[in-house]
Length: 65
Image (cartoon, rainbow, N blue to C red; front, side):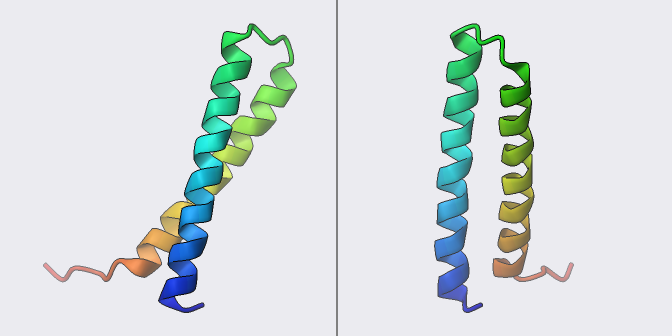
């Protein structure tokens, strides 16, 4: 993928990550008893964070110290 495509993908992943964070917070604040749904959302959020980290590592050059 080109750098432009990676940056676009990164922005989409960050948006989805924020949306999941808001959904988890809303369910928790509402006192939802559906712990399985919350756990699934948290797991998806962690996967997104891993994907975000991978793309950021690809975009940022290694620094030679």
